[in-house]
Length: 550
Image (cartoon, rainbow, N blue to C red):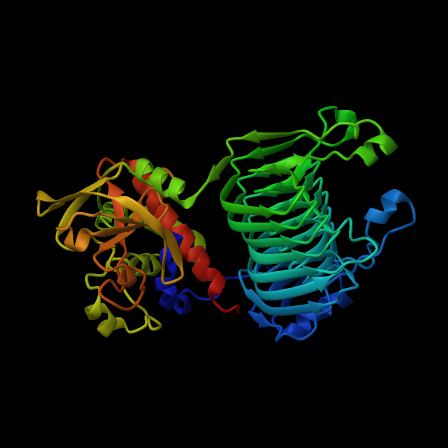
């Protein structure tokens, strides 16, 4: 339901600024200069209070990597005086136009090296990083740290060959991770590595003892010859405890000759059951490779739908012995390989049932207290009644199409969305590939539908398009379905119509300012409470993030 939040932005100025914690050591950042100055105090606690455009100027990463000493263990441990060791909360703001062109440098990104740190809750948009080792758009090297809630849009990482190229480690969110956590991040990026390099993924590159949870990757990984460890989400997941709820979607992995360990989610992963080695068996749970394409050259080896292989190399095995004389182990639990067609077919199964319009039901006065409780949690008791009424009104519009365009224009000054069933429809029933509806209590339409392909509404809402071949379908020729189900979001969101191009338009055309929201006719009190809570929590949280700081 958060997809509807974009129509509620007119409420932002009425909500007031979201209060920051009254903590004396919190340092507010609102300009590029202040962001760069974090390098003067690498242990501080920072909050971002405004969007920042870096303007494409060469960026010096926040925090740098140098080994803590000369021993093998110290080579992977950062010098804490050079790394970022504080906290950085982006508060939902956007940092844009990051450029780093350092083809001979290590640990490059918005943050070069973070250690025992927490970084997250922001969008990085339009980022291009060139580096030799441990390169990423967001964090080059994350050591014993947490990177969470980062949304990377239009990212690119280009690797350059050097003396340590065989180690590589390049990713959109994190290049190299040691003992860290990457959670609830999305990455849309292109990762490019040359011959003889390794460990590249759209979210993370080379990850050791680093778990990945709730992350989604979209984009490409392109490798030269003699490369290894290529994955949609991560190149490597060595000795990670878990990869949970991770998705590689619409990803293309292209590898040259003699490349190996290539996976839809992760190139290679795993650990050993014997606890004495301190390398846990990696468990992949609810991970999905959806529309992932692997194009590999000659002599490719170790290619898997989810994970390419467990780590094993004969040279390492001979040199180091147990446990490296056997491949690392990993488990796949409820993981899936899907195409859009599979997901679209499953959606029709998951939404079986009869639905009425959502908002007339949940805006009944009987549920006022639920609205008030959830609004008060974000904006406080005093503002909750007014905000609750505005939320209700925003999705209780009664006009759409040209009439709505005439009234609202492009929506920049506010709009009401019509979320009813238009065309006189009372109820809609989904029964597999059959979709039917009643008009004023009588049988109205009933058609068989087949999946056509993915469709995007205004570039903001992605879903699936279905079509019937029945000649008399009229305004029910096409159904556009969002991937919502009663089990996941307690409601459905969809459009129907006769014109595909018009169905993709958000604020223009015959379907402008309309997106039907359906609710099961047999919904119980718990589902009503859940859907009201979901609507309030998600929309108010997003709006609060976008408002200016005090």
